Length: 219
Image (cartoon, helix red, strand yellow):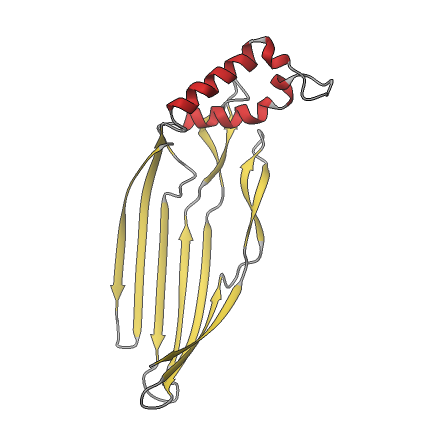
């Protein structure tokens, strides 16, 4: 379990400069704090295990049948780094939560003339930088320095759409729309964590440009 507290505010503006043009703008700022992670009972067990492995002969136990060094230096450091980072971030602002986000959406509909029924629109989605990991402290390389996060570059995403609609008869209207998402984007690897030197070592795939066509019949 954990306690999560978020505070922030949001701005939103909607305008119709003309009968055909619509514009919507919104932006938000948020600060998030996580505390009591992962709960007192789990912390008590983790502290007991951590003390046993780090300060008693338990840490010298071999890993399965291997003759390599015991769990203290073989497999435990991987877990312990995440455990110490969790403790260090308790009650702190979470830099991986993007502080600012903003969106601009616009659409123009042709209501007369040769382009009557045609619509065109676009959107810009912007996300602030977010922390993907933390460099270790100089005193203890196993302990993350929460004052020295490694940030990504943030994201800008552009979307476009084109639509056309017309009545088919007195009771049925037809509309077709093409949406193109992340117009200028390409499939890319997005870092999820880094090594102690700040080099990315785990990634996810951020999808590039994609599209969808939808037909709608209204009765």
